[in-house]
Length: 143
View 1 (tube, one colour):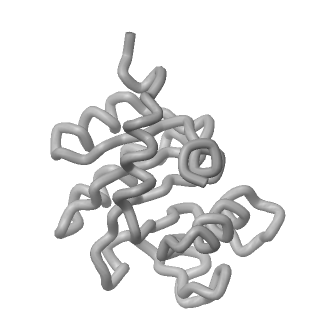
View 2: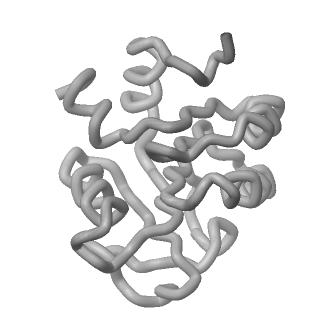
């Protein structure tokens, strides 16, 4: 069985407890979009969430300045939350691997999975969660 088919509650809870600064790729200014709602939820739980969306760079989403790319974010990132289609996950992993320091976690949202991209991140020591939503896991495990 692939270790990305399921995760222990301890693994997920450990991630949610350990990260503080989250880069949210695929952030949308549209309140109807899941990425917007999840960003708001994570902000309300005390995380620092930095939206990433090239088309919105320099604007604001949920009161936070949007950056075009992970590399443009001026502070270290603990976790990258990926609201992009699965075919983009490999590219996001490559962007994350170019950061210094490396993020601790790459978290791919519901429906987003690329085992090869995950293996590449894990080889660099980054924890990976795929096909899960932190706004679902947080109230289940933490709140």
